[in-house]
Image 1 (cartoon, protein in one colour):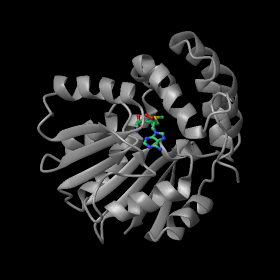
Image 2: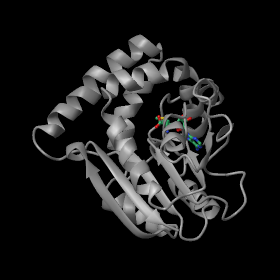
Image 3: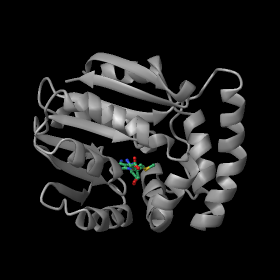
Length: 242
Ligand SMILES: C[S@@+](CC[C@H](N)C(=O)[O-])C[C@H]1O[C@@H](n2cnc3c(N)ncnc32)[C@H](O)[C@@H]1O
């Protein structure tokens, strides 16, 4: 299935468009995220961290960290760990940095601008890795997964949280209506970006989920890959081990 749905159709690469889109919505990202998800994502994030905590990681990579919600949650819930968050968008990182400082976590959470498809870190660096709602935006999913695999230590757990396509009636119908009709309108009004929240629905539709995603993880070398459907199939938690 194609993963090359792009936000703007302006002839630029998907990566350039995604970076521009997140730079443009960064100032309103947290408000929109909390409003539109109605807080449901918090439980999904907690579940990921709970799994990861069992591995007692000392250094965690949060790729596509955005405004650092997951990085901050990991640092709070695993106090012995430090977290490195990386994101393509400098404006998302700037918003994240403000939160890290406000929460007095700057000694354990460091954020930087970078690309999942060309990670500026040594092989075998991190004890655990995670990506929340980021892989769908990668220009080259396999290259991103390959790079994430490279920078994890052997035996390290790797997690992906991503929207999936619910199949159960009436969740599917409600989800489609919400994502297709409500979200783009509210998103456009609050973020002033015409395309960002239309792209969200289209990119979820075009993205591999469940066994297809598991196969992509296995394809770059992750072992023992599993997925767990969350909230009636709205979201999926994928796990694999390097
Ligand atoms: C929907 S946001 C998710 C942010 C955060 N993980 C969260 O859960 O709120 C997706 C993020 O992926 C980032 N992103 C997209 N492609 C990327 C890439 N190739 N490398 C690093 N970050 C990327 C975007 O800049 C954006 O901040």
